[in-house]
Image (cartoon, rainbow, N blue to C red; front, top):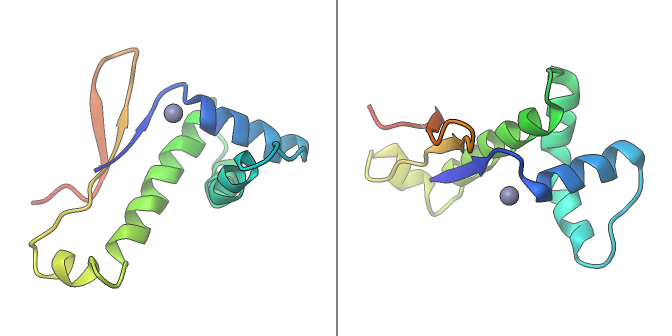
Length: 103
Ligand SMILES: [Zn+2]
């Protein structure tokens, strides 16, 4: 399971870094770079809370990456492995499955 969560400080810091064009120090910039596709998706999707949109995008993108991984894809293909993307809300205490729930 790839589990994103509400009010993620890492995603928020990356969002602000990319929005403002201000790189974060040291190894943190590697995280910013990894989150850039989710940032771009969030910017194009819009929405009331861009950090939440970006978090959900990151979950979906990461789950897709894992599903297409050369070692995992065959297992996913024959139904031996599920890669589930989900979002955890602190406000509700609930985990919302976004993608990949086994049928
Ligand atoms: Zn977090």
